[in-house]
Structure formats: structure tokens, C-alpha cells
Length: 354
Ligand SMILES: [Zn+2]
Image 1 (spheres, protein in one colour):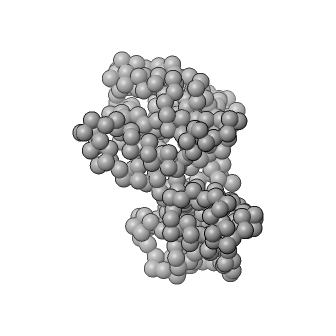
Image 2 (cartoon, rainbow, N blue to C red):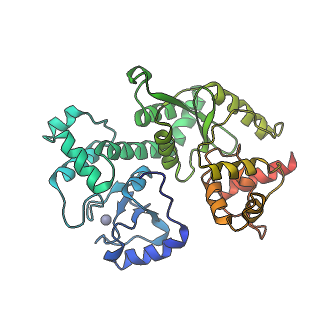
Image 3 (cartoon, rainbow, N blue to C red):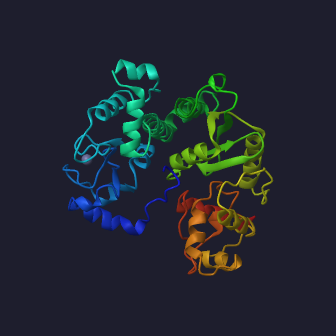
């Protein structure tokens, strides 16, 4: 269920916020709200004082909220069935909150006097994810939050001569994967590395042959993207460097310097045939030029499909390389960008001047 579910469209936010203010029970299960000012997420009917609209982020399910670094609210207990809180589930959720960075094993279940298979079944039944998936989502959300909040740590490392990514590597190891030696030989491995650019740090994920993901570290929804990639490729993701990562690091440096316009690093496009089609159209837009969603839909021979084109555009996981920043509104306005509008503006201006 995770990741493949579309994000809640922004047109819904006001409706959901109103439902939240009025504690409307008919919205139970339709959305969860993350509260930026407190770091907790709630169900629509939470009895606690309601947050301001600007502090709300809306999610379709609990796992998305966990991945975005939110912890479950103590008042409305968003991980429990509204009318019944099974003790076993409550015990486990509380155990995770007491030690959110822990990796769970069968031994731990025994210590909590919990039967592992019962735990798995109860979690799956109620939340559509296993307990281990829950614990991982919580851990990963936390670690990425630390990475994002860790700018001062990284700056300190730079000034003392350490590699800038080492803080990232530690945090990333904690969340994503076991050390290579602990992995079974049948498990596919993707490696993740930190790349500094003049527009801010990026994360690159790749196997030995092709780059799978390139995103700004502060991109909204990055956690979900990484988790989706891990599931789709059935891989472990561990910190490390591959030839495609070395290649894209060099190419990005040249791109930002203005001496490169076409990337040659091999990429893996993981998407539906339609999405891949859209991404190829995006790559055909020359640097320095822009198109609208409608232009793209027309060039695909499907002029009425511009919403689907917009969605495929948003599902791009290879920022800059697949130039979704070259898509703007038909009226000439910038439109949106996952990496933030100021970056989009910078990239377009840069490409015009190269
Ligand atoms: Zn609450």
C-alpha cells in the first residue's frame, strides 16, 4: 500500500482542514494530519486543540505520516482502531516510541511477551503494514529528519576536514540497511551517496549499472520515494559509491559550471510505460526551453491527458537529469517543483545562459 498510493491533492487540504476543525467522524480513515509545530500526527477527530492550517500536512495513511517523521499522537492514537485499542498493538507502538531507532528481532518480541506471528497478523489486519514495516517507517522518518536538521554537523565536519557525507552515511546506515556482510547473497543492493551541489545537497541511489534516484535531500516526500524504490527493486539500500554515482557527481559539477548540457550517466527509469514515455518527452526538451503540460500531452498524441502527464512529471525520481523543471504553466508562470520554486527558477535561468 505504501508509496504507490498517490499523495493527497492540494485541492483537498481545505476540506480536510475543515473536517479536522469540526472533528467529523465520517473522515476517519480518509486522512491523517501531521502537525509541523508539534511533530505528531493525528486522526481527524483528535480531541486535542487544533493546529493552524499552515502547520498541517495531510496524509492518506499512517505509514506516510511516519515516513515524514511524525510520531503518533498520545491523545487520539492514530494507529489504533477508533473503537478498540488492542493491548498487543498498544504495547508495541509504545515500545517503538520508547526507543524509535531500534531494529526489531524475534528476541525483542519475547522480551515484551508478545508472539511474533500474532503481532504481524494484528498489525497487518489493522494498518495494512507489518509491525516491522511500522518500526522501519518510524526509524527512517526520524533519521531523515536528523539528516535534514544536521546542517551544522555537516558544516563542522567540512571545517575540520572530514568528508561532508559522513554524518549522512551514519544516519543512512542506521535507517536503511544492514552492513553488507549481514545481507543474504540473493539480496539486490543499491548504494546511496551524498552529493553536494551549489543548490544544496542531493542524494543519489544507484546499482552498479545505472542511477535509480537523484533528488535534493530536502525534497518533500523523499522518504516515500526511497521506500518505494526499495520495495520496487526488492533491494537493500546501503551507503556507498558506484560507478554511476561517480559519473553523475562529475557531470553535475560540469552542469552547474555551465560546461555540460546533456547527461550521459546511465539511468534506470522505474515507472509505467506511460510514465516512461512522459520522461522521455521531458528529456527531449532542449536546455533553455520550456513546455507546458498541454504541450507535452499533445506531443504524446494525447492532448486530453495533461493531468496524467502532470502526475508522471511529479513522479520523476531523477531531478535535473529528467528535466521536469522545464515544464511550466501554460500562462508562463513557473508552476510547481518538488525541489522548490527558487531552485526551479535558478535552473531555468542557468540553462538559458549556458
Ligand atoms: Zn491527536
